[in-house]
Length: 179
Length: 79
Image (cartoon, rainbow over all chains, first blue to last red):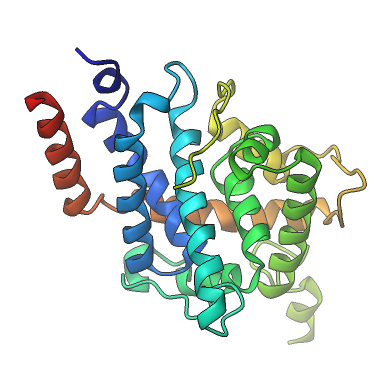
């Protein structure tokens, strides 16, 4: 069996697909572009399988390929389109009701308001659960830069989502007595 | 094409990290890296982010990717 085959078994890649796709959608803001990114990532991963070191983190490697593709596209489109981070027209083609009570669209829109760097850092660390060190490797930057981006992303997102330290349902306790 | 650099081993379960980093840990990781949120806000935001992301992860993998992977596997085997 070839070395590549042992690493990139169909099953291994299929297992990472849900996370890779969730990251792509949250990063670029729409499902269609995300699917293109995921497809490109799979093809690049397969073509460069010999460069992957067996025993290292395959998921992190795939995420690195995907974010590199995203950011090189972003640099390309920025010249043509007056769209700050390419995600202004964020949308999900799935219907919100498919996703329970949570307003997915609102959250996606709020993410799109962040700078691409901040959005990426928050998703890797806060949503995907990579360590700061892993995220720094994926993004090719310093650990301190990742920490700073995550903190800024959290602050901005809290503002955008109007998240406050109130009771469980988000209403100030005082408002109940005022009614 | 830009190739990713090599990545070290992941050593901790992702779930554990999500909880730790999204505020279930009360101790502050504050350093000179930007504003720190109130821990309750962080916790709430973390829950929202996890809920949002969790829904996306639950989506079924589109058939196009399964087909692509099958095709790649077949090509490799025939080589």
